[in-house]
Length: 349
Ligand SMILES: Cc1cc2nc3c(=O)[nH]c(=O)nc-3n(C[C@H](O)[C@H](O)[C@H](O)COP(=O)(O)O)c2cc1C
Image (cartoon, rainbow, N blue to C red):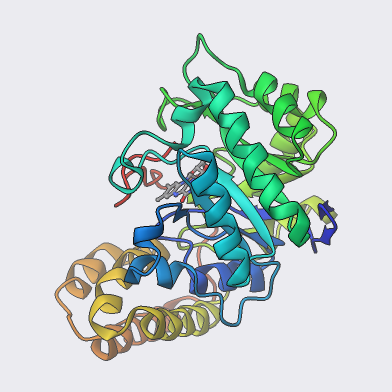
């Protein structure tokens, strides 16, 4: 599979999740079987580009590539400028966010709200493509099925995005109005796939190898994007990949492998965020990794009292060392833990 002229190693993508899919987590997902990872969104507001948050998000040191940066905003010229700014900092693919509700970043409703204003949505896509094309950078776009049940316009928009040169479309199978309620529907994703020739990526509620196979079959999509199910389970990509290739399930990871992965993840997390911020922002990752393990909840509560990153890492190592004394491998995943739907960025679309 290709995005524009850029080849990918496989068709399993990790979804952009603000506050989650930072560089350390993206690298981990790629090392564990994801073929592609898009960054957390970066605002098109120039006055925020030098903020600590945006500059961390624009840091791609050591990423295997292709480097894909997602931009969000409501004005075509600003979005085009943001695309160029990120290309100059290493972006090889620009993704347009039509799911961002972050009013505080954009000053007005952006993202999926743009699906209500098709002319503006298409003008943004056109301006970004015009800025990126001379630099040889493909533009992709991520959207929902529509604004609300009565206004599912993903197919009409997809045709227009393709016509202005968007190279790949990702569709999350819910409307903006739905938030995360109900189950994702895949008929609209299938209709988008049937309507355009560029690659289409299906997204929403893929949380197991079986579900991945089912969504690929139901949509005919070229690729799958996995978000919440990868939280604390970045090896889900190799599990899905193995199942799609062989029809068989991989054994869950060894506890010793989890220990190696998690401790390395924490090292890279602390080095990106610094010790003080890192110890706090790492807590959610640790909690996700350990949520279904024996004693995981008690450990999480104790860990939340630790304010020093070395103490946090040592506590995780000790917990996993003790766990390793009672089991070799992680238990096979049961019914998925309730998905996280809240983010520091607002409720995502
Ligand atoms: C914590 C969180 C942050 C998110 N941030 C973004 C984002 O920055 N850009 C974006 O396009 N979508 C964002 N999303 C939406 C996801 O990319 C994805 O579309 C959604 O979670 C549905 O996929 P899933 O069911 O596999 O999680 C976010 C979702 C979550 C849960």
